[in-house]
Length: 339
Image 1 (cartoon, rainbow, N blue to C red):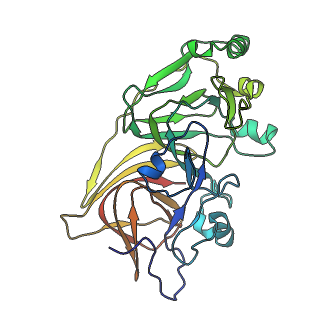
Image 2 (cartoon, rainbow, N blue to C red):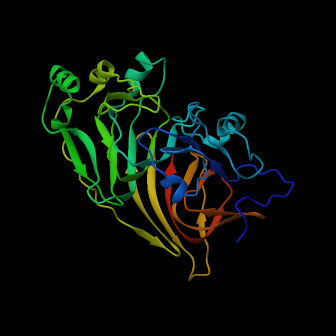
Image 3 (cartoon, rainbow, N blue to C red):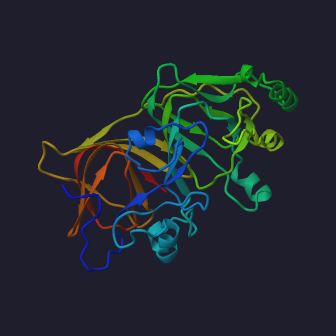
């Protein structure tokens, strides 16, 4: 197996895949697992999030291999808009953002606006609908998903002020391999002990409703956005989310299942095991859209043309639209994200 960087010749590497290097976030609720378990080697403590595939200015990722190594993904896509594909929803911009999240402590109770609200009130930004895939969960770990019963703005406003909002919140137990679709407007929070992969719209708009009275490293309480949150929050009772039926489809050396399909993204779980078969797993993005492979476990190597690079747990691979065909070898699990 080769080292982490690709071996490249002097030929143009058009539409070749490349590894990404994430941006890190040191939010106060984070832990150390992204460094310890995923070898991120980011000098932050805590390390709460890594933005694995991002062109958002608050946390851009960059190429970590290939001819673009060291360049921001946003600059690469600006120079090569064809990498995004022909689907109209890309509109010349990467429409998604992929994160790893380590919640050592509870995240704030929060809500995200819709695209319509964000365009009108947040200078044309995108709203935020997201999907969570649980990579690991401590015993008893939970998440907040909406409200137990119908409520109203005044009741929630009062409960935030007197610190009793938790009695309204629906808390759902989580386990490894669970998935949750969090539509814009859904009040939510990731609970302590959860390790999450998040796929979302390319947005950093979060309205924080409640933060348990915590203070940051400077001794100051974090800003709340109560009135904006109440404007966009769905205050009706939420049905407790149930895990959907998932069907693995097999081919030689590989199995995959659909996790989520919405107007913003499609996400599959892909299991690769070529240890006992001679044929490598083929993988390719068509002309309509890019793809992203986030390795959540295992390791292996990707071959294409005369090139090869190794990947490991935690690595993220950007695959341009109309890509060359990859041949994947190893034993690994991926989230396969399509724009």
